[in-house]
Length: 70
Image (cartoon, rainbow, N blue to C red; front, side, top):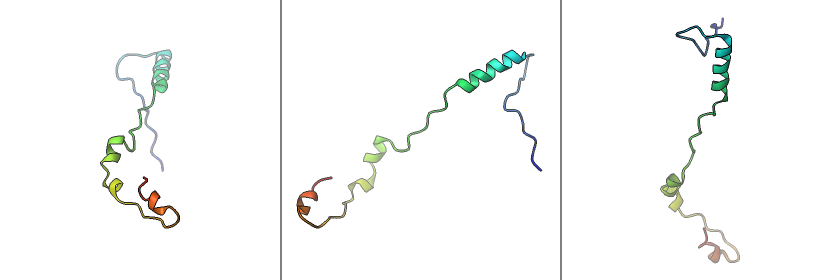
């Protein structure tokens, strides 16, 4: 058995007309969503200790030259 749904909006004081409630709902629905927090900022990436770890070296022609490149 499911629980009956509760209203998301409740008028606490006053006697709002259906038009006023519709206007309030329209304004609340039109507002922008909360901004997402960035998953990784620039300051976090440069402090990451994994950044300083050496990448595996590859063998082959001009491998010594490629070893100095990021």
